[in-house]
Amino acid sequence: MRPVLTCLPRLAVLLAVTSGPVSGQDKPNSRTVTIEVTEPTGGGVPHAEVRFSPPPEDRPGQLETDINGKLTLNLKPGGYTLVLARPGFKTFSTPITVRDAEEIQTVSVRLQIGEAGSAMVETAPLNSPPNKCATSEPLKPTKTFTGIYTDEATRNGVEGKVVLCMTVNGNGIVTDVVALSGPSELIQPSIDAAKKFQFEPPPRVPAATKIEMGYNLTKPCPAGGKGMDVGEVTVAIGTGHTLEGEQDDALKIVGRVSQPLPPYPEKARAEWRRGQLYLSIVVNPEGRVVEAKIVRSLDNVLDQPALDTARTWRFKVSSGGKTTVFPVTLSFQIPCLDHR
Image 1 (cartoon, helix red, strand yellow):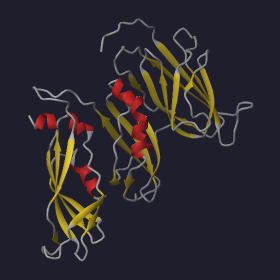
Image 2 (cartoon, helix red, strand yellow; image 1 turned 135 degrees about the horizontal axis):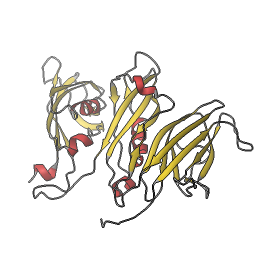
Image 3 (cartoon, rainbow, N blue to C red; image 1 turned 30 degrees about the vertical axis):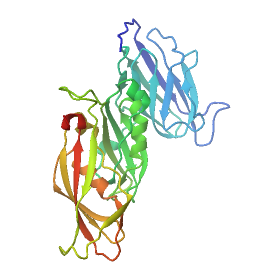
Image 4 (cartoon, rainbow, N blue to C red; image 1 turned 120 degrees about the horizontal axis):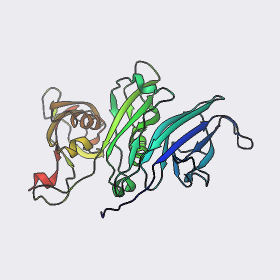
């Protein structure tokens, strides 16, 4: 990308979050939020893009400040991730909470100038109200998913880590997800993935747990390799035997109902971690995986997501057999490195 030299002033952002009804705009169970974007001299900044996650129900389209640098809208009480974007400046992202009370919340932020052609990202810590994940509980996931790179993030070369706070009910289902920090272009795909997580039932409900999702773009293969350092996962399932060690009554896998590939976590791929992970899965006569364990570990980043995925597999199996143990080999490869 050709470098572009620009000379732009610093931008100060004042977020005035005012809770309370405004004449002609109040709705049941909603609060009015006013956002002001100003520059250091005090002048309003018009046409600054404003995004909320989750998006407001009453204003689903694109939002931006008016000619005076202000935006007023109704939001239901709860947690949101607020993102402000303005060409030439670093994007600002922060969690906010709209309280169901007659009070004013104010957050003041100063954004830094962004370099043309770079990923312009700045994240802010949660300062008000207190983060419910401050006492995050370690919960055991039964299903995990990874976020997907958006076209915008790919074009802008955005990499980084998104930190999320998830609320989990007594059945291990995620009921709420709030982004705590991370590049704005990666927040929504991370939230979408986190909402599909499932956990073992927590001992106390509702439970709050914090997770991180890392994102790294692929790069040209080094040392004369062709292509990009894209990760690849292959699965090989061997011949099974019954729990008693016999093969005559063992099931045979004749088809796949659901067998998603394990994820190749971005942290592992970006650091070129690769090799073979050996698992053992137990399949019942209905074709469901009822148990899975690691026989030979590969890597602490790769092992657990792969094990969690294997536990979700379902197969079409031969009739008349007994519950069967199958050996599984998962190969994590970066073809441009491994096939030179």
